[in-house]
Length: 115
Image 1 (spheres, rainbow, N blue to C red):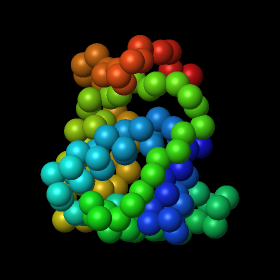
Image 2: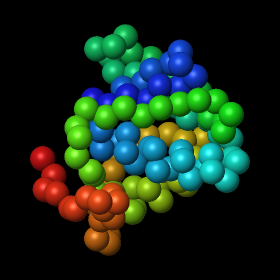
Image 3: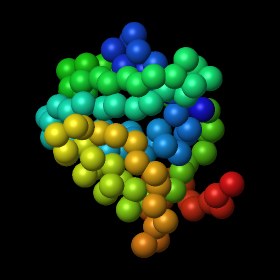
Image 4: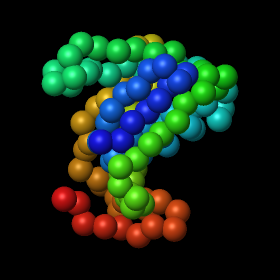
């Protein structure tokens, strides 16, 4: 499980693959100077509930990964997450769809088998 640390006070845990896709979508919006909400449900083992944060380019955040391996990216999932981020409710985690095109590969990486 990787983690997103937001404003040094909020930490959210996500699977490394999920976190890598979120980093691409969040980074693209923040580079364009776009602010938006990001909401997710908290695992019941961690207390459950729902969190929502205001993502803004001026607020520091970091991404930490457990695996030290480049990931492959699903273009269709990136599009679905981006559409969600552009909606009035903001970025919501949506299930990963089966890719309709070959996956994108992180810089310096190569495609790897899914587990």
